[in-house]
Image 1: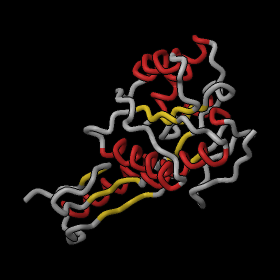
Image 2 (image 1 turned 90 degrees about the horizontal axis):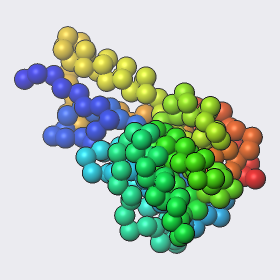
Image 3 (image 1 turned 90 degrees about the vertical axis):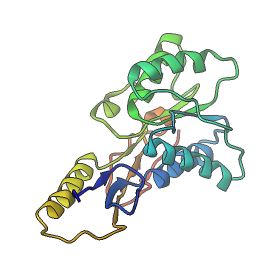
Image 4 (image 1 turned 30 degrees about the horizontal axis):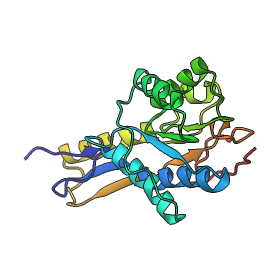
Length: 213
């Protein structure tokens, strides 16, 4: 049989798998909004169907609510993962008189689209609404305002997957059924959630120090 290694997926048929920890940091960043900033009407923007990463991020989002005794939204706001999708959804969400006080986006592109919609509508971030993303892409720190997000080791994810696959192809390392490598992710709290000054990405803790304003 051909050597197979899954990347950024839930494990299937005990195949070797390399993924990042989506749920823990999603729970941490949601808890931060609820507990540190006192927000109570959060929305989750992204479609968990067909995306194991988004599915886990949605689970962390709901788990954070449950742990604090707060009822989470019944469902996410399903949307694609591109900036245009975030902009479109942002215009709808921010125009609603009952809009949430925070939007947890499934990735940074969605969040950047929401920030663009907020500027168009004159909605202040974070004064009127908090916005968070996921991935910590290069544009996140240059967004207006700088984007609170979750840093994931994207290069390491690809490198570990490739290394594991090459080892199996060359038979340098025997396959071990059920092997799962889970890489850590790190919340990065910046201005878009109401934290100031921005907190640089760290690698030693899942919850960097922050100062709500």
